[in-house]
Amino acid sequence: MKIIIIDDDALVCESLATIAVHGAIKQGTEAIEVLAVGHDGKAAIELYNKYQPDIILLDIRMPELDGLEAGKIILENNPEAKILYLTTFLDEEYIVQALRIGAKGYLMKSSVKNVLPALYAIERGQRVFGDEIIEKLPPLLDQAAKNKTGQQAKNNVFSKLSATEYTIVELIADGKNNREIAEALHFSEGTIRNYLSTILEKLNLRDRTQLAITYYKQH
Image 1 (spheres, rainbow, N blue to C red):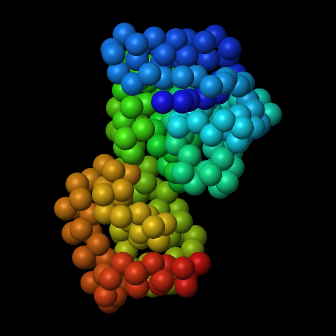
Image 2 (cartoon, rainbow, N blue to C red):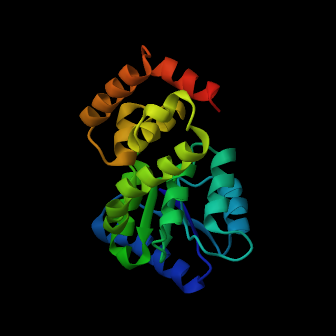
């Protein structure tokens, strides 16, 4: 596995590189190679474009360009990019933004022992969020959807949906399947199927394709 580490603290970069490389050797798991390290958002974009790593570990608050904006640019140009945010900040706004741009993980630096297993999980296509993040996800997603529906959907067809249902509609419109939606919202696939059935019934639509088309007609 090839990774890039971006943090404005050089010592943090060095520590993360040691944890990743030597941790993999100690456990006898797939080898990890640190292709490069950088210390701001601009470096993150430049190094990602240069090396195309399997995963980029990215801090959030950094000089020049913060990690969220850098991640957004990276994903716009490389939709397949896998970003793992590793930060000291548990700000709700940061978590929501990381989810919305498509980050694969969000961990606190205090949970550094989870970095290595998180890297392997993300490489396998999973999403990884620290326990502190998971506790905040459902209310955060509900509030984000409420804010959006309050501003944009008071008089449109989606106004009859709950905040969680509207969030699911957004994820469907973004091309996510039931498994991916379940992972993002930390629900079971069965729960997502039940939500989808309710949404289609409320909106008098036949399937998720019609749902996505209806969503884009409203935006």
